[in-house]
Figure 1 (cartoon, helix red, strand yellow):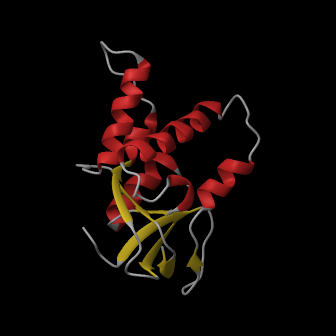
Figure 2 (tube, rainbow, N blue to C red):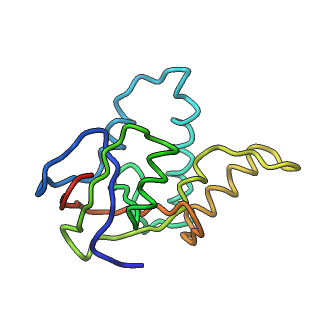
Figure 3 (cartoon, rainbow, N blue to C red):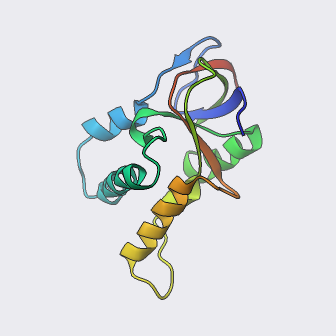
Length: 152
C-alpha cells in the first residue's frame, strides 16, 4: 500500500520537521565492533543483503533505507517486541517517488523450522522477506528520507 504517513521507531525523540535520512542502520552496522554477542545478527544482515540482490534487486537495501510501520498500532507492536525504549514518530515521505518494500520484520528473528536445516530455514525466511507479501508484522523499507510530523 502506497501512502504518505508512516510510523518510525527511533532511540531518540526528534522534533517536528526533522528529516530522517536513509542509511542509519547500515552506518551503525558498518562501524560497530563485531562482537560475539552480535555476530549472529551481523551475519543475518549480510545474508539478507545477498538475498535482496537475488530476489528483489530493485528493493531498497536494509542498509540504506528508513524502516517504518504502516500504522501506529504496528509501530507500538514492533517497539514492544524489539525496542522497548523507542520513541515513535509519525513521519511522511519527503519524496513521494521513493522506492518502497513491504516485508515481515518477524522473519528476521532467526527461527528454525522442524525438519529442515537452519540454512534452509534461513533461506526460506530470506526469500519470503524479499517477496514482499507480509500478512502480519509489516515493516516498510523506504529508499528515501522521511520527515517527522510528530512524536509520541
